Amino acid sequence: MIMRRATNVCGATSRGDTLWFLHDRFGLFIHWGIYSVASRHEWVKKYEALSDEDYQSYFDHFNPDLYDPRAWAKIAKRAGMKYFVITTKHHDGFCLWDTQLTDYKAPNTQAGRDLIAPMVEAFRTAGMKIGFYYSLLDWHHPEYTVDKNYPQSGDNAYIEAAKHRDIRKYAGYMRGQVRELLTNYGKIDLMFYDFSWSHQPEKGRFKNKGKDDWESEKLLALTRELQPDILVNDRLDIPGDYTTPEQAQPRGPLYKDGKPVVWEACHTLNGSWGCHRDNLNWKSPRMLVEMLIDCVSKNGNLILNIGPNARGEFDLRTMGTLEAIGEWMRLHNTAIYGCRASEFEAPSGCRLTQNGKKLYVHLFHWPMNHLWLDGLADKASFARLLSDGSEIRIMKKQPWGLDAHGDASDQRDALMLELPIQRPDVLVPVIELTLT
Ligand code: GLC
Image 1: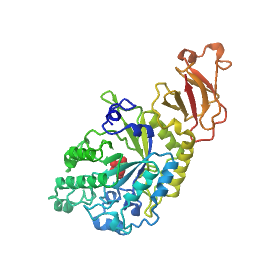
Image 2: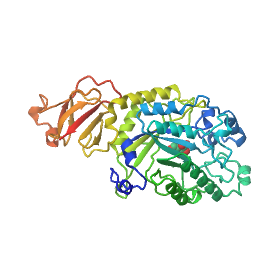
Image 3: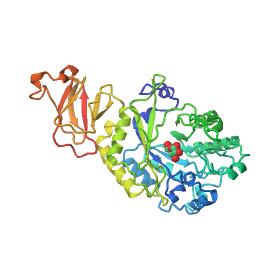
């Protein structure tokens, strides 16, 4: 175990076990709770400043009669995802498991049972790693202090009545809940705490919440005590094992103090994490595959989010998207799993991923006839299209007409490939080079 935690394959140091994480690269995020009944974003309580009474109808009408976590796990696996992270509790404070510390939980809805236990079992049986998301924000707990993100942040009477609240009691409640989550469901591989904003400039009447409110050191120590190998993200306002750019792709590998950082970009399918019926801002499967490749080419992971609906299913568009990604992954997963950034430079319109002697050229743009790869002349023994295994010829000399002029690519020590005119009919074509 010590070895696994020392220096991971990206050269970064983390305390939790990053080996599987850096290998697996692609995960499923699931945002599910009673906000799926509103189907207007998981922040609907805040966005519409709903009172507890207003919001109660989502609790009363939450009835996921079609919930079948084995079907979820099957879809995720087919999409090529290797781990999953479920919102055990989101900002509204509703808990999907049978916690003993509040009545605000799935067993007390029409669901009538712990919804986490069968999910963990289904994904574990499918061979996937298990991650829990746990919200630090809580818009239901009686001791959670009002802040700028609180649904009633504009309601003076509410703020006055909430003045006596004691965030330390809430911090104790969180530790109690985390103890349940990390004790009752077997090995948990990852913990995604969400979120702190102490780093933001303070303005207005509210203090920004951060590590002192959450008692982050204690929470993290408890997390590691209960699950020694667990990977913990960095949203507790103290350093964690990996960092989580949200709905953004970094421009290159991430570093802190000159050292590489383990990271995972988290993305929605359409801008909302919880299901959002009328939001049509869907990313195409091709864009999503490009994002996955882009992450790996920069030493990162992608966790892609699904917001199941109130009856407990993924909607048709989500399933179509995952199916399309899965078809690409079926043919190209060796260019993702176990891969990392390459030391070579990607040609324009391409990304490179590498796993030892295998170098993968992902072509976001399909060039006409030729592709030059700088610094790779004589360094590859074979090239093939990954989709069908067909050879891509390595050219011995410049194409006719360029040979007479000593093209600049000569000086850059370029490997030259001859591509077919027809772009292969896959979301992103990949050429695999076997390096010598
Ligand atoms: C944000 C949002 C939240 C979502 C999360 C995912 O912090 O508050 O709704 O769960 O990001 O990373």
